[in-house]
Each structure stands twice: as C-alpha cells, then as structure tokens.
Image (cartoon, rainbow, N blue to C red; front, side):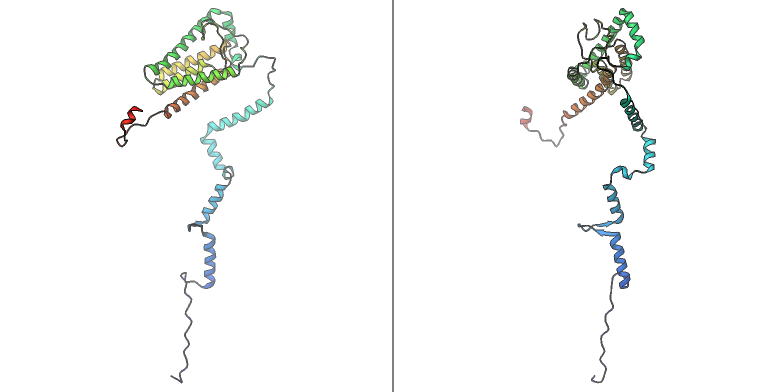
Length: 288
C-alpha cells in the first residue's frame, strides 16, 4: 500500500447526444440555427416559412410571373377585353372635342335611326300606330308584374318596379334633360295624353327587363325572349321618335338588373327562419 504508486482517476470523456467532436458540434449547431428557429411560442420556423412570409408582405404584383400573365390572358378574356376598352376610350375621351353648350347633344342612336325618324315624320299615322303598340307593351309589362304579386304571391318583381320608378323620379327631377330636337310625340304614347315625362332613365326599358328577369326565374323562357325582342323594338322606336337619348335606354337596362337584384336581397333579409322541433315557442309569442 505504502510503496504502490498512486493511481490518478482518468478524466471522463465528454458525452454529447450528437456523437461529434467539439468543432463539428459547433458547425452543426450553427447550421441548425440558420435552418430552424423557434418563435416565442416554442414553434419551429423553417427558412421556407420565413421566405414565404416575406413574400406575403410584398405587394401582389411583385410576385407575378410571365406564366401568371399568360394564364390571365388565356382564361380571363372578358376582363382583358374591358381593359383594352378602357385604354381605347381613354384615348377617345381625352382627344374628342366637347359639344358646345349652345348645341344639341350628340347621340349615336339618333344618327343610327335617322332614316326611321324621317319616315315617322312624314307619316303621323304610322307614328301613332307604333305609339299605340308600345303602350300595349307597357300594359303587358305592368299586368305581368302585378300578376306575379297579386295572383302568384311573389312580390319580388313588384318591389323591384317600386324601387326602380322611385329612383327614376329622383334622378329625373335632379337633372332635367332638354327634350331632344325633332321629338315626335303622340297622344296615345305612354304616358297617354302628351304629358311631360322624365327622360333619364327609360322606365319603358327598365320595366321590361324586370319582367323578363322574373320570367327566366320561373323558367318561362319563351315569354322572356318575346319580351326581350319587343324591348329591342321599343328601344329602336324611342330613338326614332327622339323620345329618349341612347344613355336613357342603356341605363334603363342596367337599372332593371340592379333593382331586381336589390329586391331579391330585400326578400332574403325579410325571410323568417322556420320553426324547428328544438325551438321553444311560448304562449306569449303568438300574441306579440
């Protein structure tokens, strides 16, 4: 014991979970830090996630590629057509000389129906006959719209017509356009009796569109197509007699579509949810 040399304990080897040298461990740790990070919630965040997040913060057009542009041109031709129309009419608008305040408005529809205007001017009987037929068509529109409400119990077309004519009255009174030069009136034209009327917008056209849309909802396609054809003939006659400007007729179509949609939204908002088996109905509910 006394003469034996003392045995010193050997130092324990360094252990690590990665079985690597200190230098390699440092490299691996550095690599791991750059590829995966941990956010404040302890969730790992990869480099791809960081890049994706950076792209999301950029403006949308900065991420577009040539393939995206080709895809839009191929599969979204209608918006592309309207984009070309925007550029074209910007050029027309900014280079066109405006109509002087002392002149009559320029109307392309009047130019297109110039020959019809001459025929109707030379034949008052024909003008009166066509006005009578147009009044009959207005009566057909009114009858159908009221029929859907009073007989079929579907008020959407009637609500749409009420919206449309109220808005027409507001806009027509707000901007009272001058009567077109060469207007050919008739005592049998609607409104009957040569009374005054608002030019903007055409209630004749808008009412016909409202009726036609309701017919399509009810799958009365033949009747709807008949109304569409009569509406086109009505528009041609109104231009030929100078009873409306072209813009009155075009906005009339849009107004019919718009107010039909608004009437549908109004109906949806007023629908009462059905009473289910799980709904508790108290006695007081029937008296409120």
